[in-house]
Image 1 (cartoon, rainbow, N blue to C red):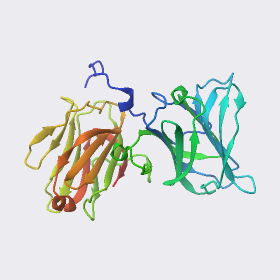
Image 2: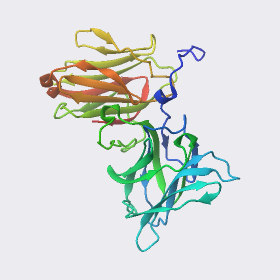
Image 3: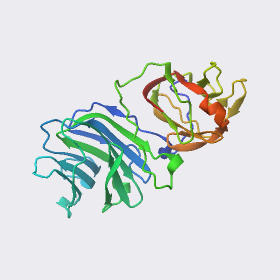
Image 4: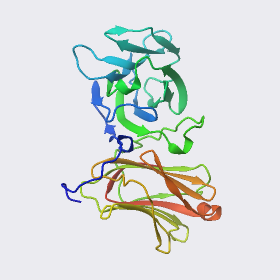
Length: 314
């Protein structure tokens, strides 16, 4: 795809901001498209052994003078007799009434994964997969366009995602799948074994970055006999996304083509009775049929194509 080739415009909510790996703290960055209900920010890192405090600020701008308003200030403090978290809002240079949450749910010297889930009226925060606190907005969420991280914290990755469309409207808390497991990039082609096959409720998560001059992207599921009952293929030549059967039959997916050069992507495959549901960049795109017996016999997940991989989770 040439650099000057016309790309169809797509909604901001379909575009995912690339993750940031090992940023130097203090770290301030623009949140592409701002914040809106359904967006998540994931913070993965380590609390230093001698940590006293750190803060994560969701700001309304990035100027230094005057200091920007802060819609949500998340501030774990370890130096007191009883470690705790302070949440607050800064408006017009003045802090409002702070909210204190006892128990930090973070340990000095330990790794963590913090997930900020922004909803219509409040932000929810989970630590290592467990809900920790919620905070009602005091400033409009639409004003937030900057993320700031300060203090005693070692950040491994910062990710910007949309909520899982498969659990939208339910009470289930979104699962935060780490961007980094051992290394910031996985080898492509990538193969992973599925010892138990697939079962209803299981979600396959694939995150990566499309190369500058991509050709294709393929995600295939193979059974023990090396047959390929399920293949998801993106073609950058004709900009189509399709399911391809083991007999070579192609079923095009009627949806915006969201794989763009040098842009981040997230593929979700949800296994359910009767087949697999697909979501790309937090947008549900349909399903493909496969009986339960065939799903249980799938033993290998293989990914290839013109991408860098950051996360493969199943």
